[in-house]
Image (cartoon, rainbow, N blue to C red; front, side, top):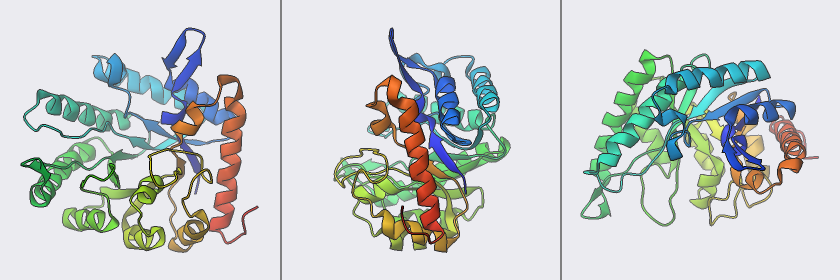
Length: 296
């Protein structure tokens, strides 16, 4: 298992001219801190007229792959563009879908059969969550994404999410397992987000045991069970002492991937190299605990 960090943490650089979107610089900083793998974040790459929404988006993706190669890091997972469907009739839905499709194709430039993480979508009826419509839609939607992914040598991982007190598909391990069993295709897997599970008040160990056959990638971060804080591990209430030995017992061999943009984003630019090294040290200790060693 390798330590990894999402570029969602490092892609925004604080400069004298203000905040600048520069994932390549973030990749270099991660490599300098000891990370040999990154999760390339396409989730924010189409916002504010950024490259994924422009005509040369495929050229830009190749440039990002070159930046990763130059830094000596491997991309084994990416994050697709994500959104909610508030109004099915809105033209924004098709634009969002196109950005999601682009992020899957762009992922094919980043590595050898990477996993692209996508968020579940939910449909409403009369303003209320419709389980039947949502489940039918998700099966069709995922099969369409799977066809695109297979064409471009990419795999799709469905993430568990949580949105406040609202009912949305994909908040539980049971729903993700149902989707995996229904799709019944190895091109699909699960991305387990520990922070989202904590907000949803799930039994972490029971959920991990349930999704274990499908667990492909991870989003590792912390919170206090209320907001989606994306803290460094141990800065919240996620029960890592229970989780880490269970990860070891389950034999998970994907990356241990940090998604910690909130903590990292509040740190002054001059202190960020030290913060990344500290995060890497946290990760090394977590890997030791997975092997049965006590925390240090």
